[in-house]
Length: 375
Image (cartoon, rainbow, N blue to C red; front, side, top):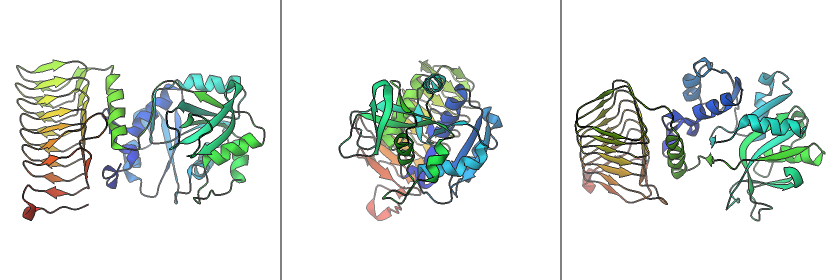
């Protein structure tokens, strides 16, 4: 996800107007979970300042600090003092998004008297993931992390239900060849000791947000399922709005603009005359689109200015960027257009080849001798 993650945790990147972590909190809350422990790194003020004690999101949030990245099993163990002896808990990775019935998964876990249940999904190419081999009834027989020769096409989807027997196996865990305490090794130890461990197959949507294309795909998916449509700002005459659209407070859509849903536009934005926005566009707060700007399948983060006669598709634009006139950046279903890091300035007339990436604080001008690029 670099260059976007130079200036924020990946878990706080926006999807359909909300950080990835906020979607996960909503998912947990929909399953009846109202107490959350977030395991964070040593530089996670971005997360703690946003979520606070969780009251704004109808949950109670406590924080546990993992001082060194020693693996997922270690991260879970760091949270153990705050779990206060709970017999059962759910662990979920902070960078995955689900369309899954959590209550149904909990029922599945209880009926089988499982000591651990893993959400699994089918993948055409399982090699980049943790892979699970299951036997009749989806009882787990073996787990392998990123295998060259996968024992099945069932991959671990980053969501787990554990009973407190899990802690006994954590105590006996040894580091992997990477020097990390792997959660797959901990679950395999449960299997080896005869504990009933099951895979819960989700046939609904699941996305590991590891690349810019994943972020765009996730945004498309959530935008396509918007159920709350509203226009809270000012819409001038001769503006065309079609499909599901959300427009925030104090935003102005100027005469002659066209907005095609699904699209989310934040607060205090300006969408100038002749702009064509959407479908599948997500715009943060305090964004200004000057005139004749075309955006499609694109994320524009807050406080960014885009000048006139700009066309951008399949791209991610960071915060506090300035995009000059007549800039072009177009991708397709296989390759994103451009990813631009925060606080960057793009001069007039620049055209990006598909798959281009710029680090934060970059400055690009049309004439070579004026260039001052960083990152």
